[in-house]
Amino acid sequence: MKLVFIFGDAAAGKMTVGQELSKITDLKLFHNHMSIEPVIELFGTYNRTVVNAFREAVFTEFAESDRYGMIFTYLFSFDSPEDWAYIDHVREIFAPYGTEFYYAELIAPLPVRLERNRSENRLACKPSKRDLEQSETLLLKTDEKYRCVSLPGEIPWPHYLRIENEHVPAEEAARMIKNSFGL
Image (cartoon, rainbow, N blue to C red; front, side, top):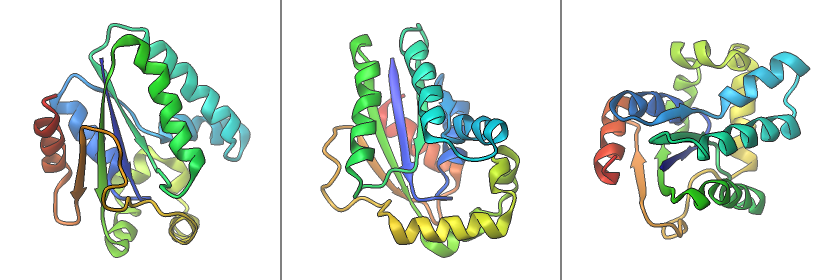
């Protein structure tokens, strides 16, 4: 089995690149809002405990399956020990099944991400982003509070690819990931 993590700032293109990667591989996409949106719909707000329990169930069942692999998108705060521990935890779920792990980081400047935050695909797949003023405010606060771009040499894992995707279409970024990792 293969597990591809796609990291990046808010609106860096993680879901869109994941969608394109799933089209050209046998990998199934589990973007982070697939667990967030139902929780917000049911509870009226984000509930980390429920989101993590939902993800845990999906990861556990998927890891035990005979599927080719999964793409998981995640807004990774590199200055947060909890985020590093969470990625390690996800790896621990999959590791007993001989899973190969791959990491792609997408980087785009703030003006590009603010524009992408309003994209039709993002709004269609992420209802919680449809209040554009609130979504933009959250994006800016996330940028102020967290460092979601890795430092040179910070990623300790093999099979890592960094893509500055300001001028790279999602389809091309997906091809880069597929070719780099032999997916």
